[in-house]
Length: 149
Image (tube, rainbow, N blue to C red; front, side):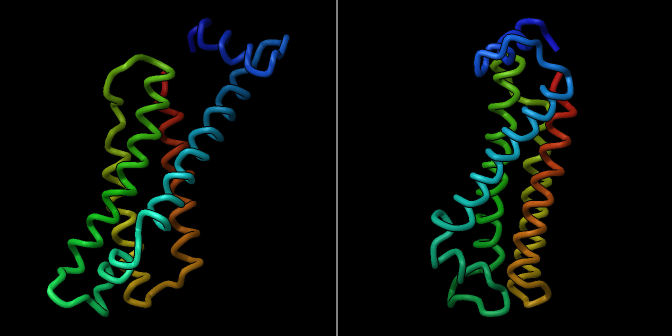
């Protein structure tokens, strides 16, 4: 961790003592987790809409609408939010360049597709669906924070 980055974190809240490596790690984890949760709420509720909510359901597909396509668009939106959160964390910590852990967005796409498909087919309920999404966001954050230089 660079001294300049530690100094910036030390100035937050006008704290006069230095921040330990654990405090820095915990702060980054919580901020990134919060950002991913905000993205999840946006993608699952206001940005999903009735068309996507109904269209992604393979057990009751909409006429002339491939359910797998609608589900893929929904999962892609979630992946985009994960990518954006990790990219911003990378840019704030290192430099304006593409994060080398872009593959977390691909994992989020696959995870969200599988979990929502299971929910739509009645294999899991709403609370399990949301619990799995939140748990995997915590995993993505742990991976992302561990990869920050």
